[in-house]
Image 1: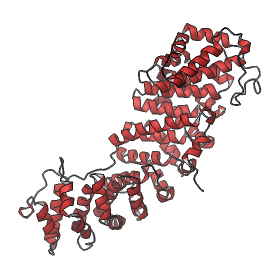
Image 2: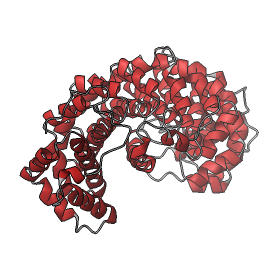
Image 3: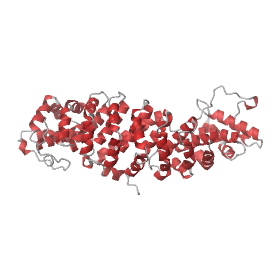
Image 4: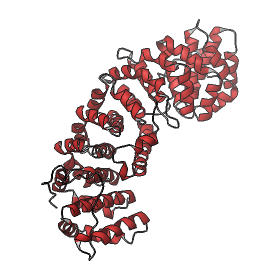
Length: 509
């Protein structure tokens, strides 16, 4: 199936009338935040350190200079080659300031890559692969030097053979793929995934499985362009099985991979969701004890909630709302913000989906988030409420009013966060339009005045931001002016079907 573009997906996404640009900006901002967090919790590249600081060094293996290492690598004597390769690996494994540029400039890459062909000597292949891994952990220029040396197809071949050399080759390829989309695609087009798949099983040795999971996550990450889905999708059934392992490092990397794969067109979300056992196992990880696992599991689940109504329903049926309710009160700002974002996408859905959220008590949890001191979390909670004011039934809006949201919601009008102010102004305008349909503008306006919201809206008419000025001025001019309430124009947005299906319902402001 041909993939729709990300833009077309947003254009057709749920309440598109709210403005797809608004939704797109919101998602982009969240993605940037998560990518920064991902770099802290899951490094793009990893340098392989020597396993023991006190590794015994034979007299013949005393510290060698780059020139001596080059001479040794070019030697026809196998023992001399191994000694030189090991010296190169040790030098590049220094904890502080490894001399990667010095070694590359000395020309070590060519003989190291040649050493990868020595099937008669796994020790030499291992040392060479380790040294190349650490060169690829450096700058973009260092990684490109590794690619230009012709190492990728040789590393893929060794990866496919497994063992300790295969694991080290996976690590090197993960470093190369983590350098960017182009480098990722080079690794994939040389057949890295089929070679990696045998390692992506629960019975793989723990260290090898951690390396394989991290490498797979790097094969899925990076945008502009997104990874070709068909090159990484064959691993999904393997990934579903790995979601049951106990190792939190493996779980974290697998969940990050799923977060990258679901951050795109609905067709990708569909492939992930319909992989047997994958969705319920992913949703279950929202309650994992480690924040390093919960964070990417939450991002992947949140991405799925931006998909089609059917895809959102699957997440709800898997029980995501119960876990999101817990996360909204976990007191970890990054997780609270992400959970509020996920809930806001449910509240941007169908009225049946909104009702599930109402029945699960999510409105009270969002109100709690509004009272926290993290403005980013508050903004996401406000987005959820504004989405509900746009698409909810009269009964759902009545439940919203009964939740006591109005005062903490309106307090964001005094925030320094311009986006939060705009979101709240939009929600208030939606509420006032709905109140007009039921002849309840006056009680709502009285309530807004009593909680101090009217003063805040009036003050915003002097705001330097043009959008905030226009929206606040429209509210004051339309609903707090001297004209008769009957002069307020009727709302014609088809999202509201009040009075047609349930003519006796009302909203009690």
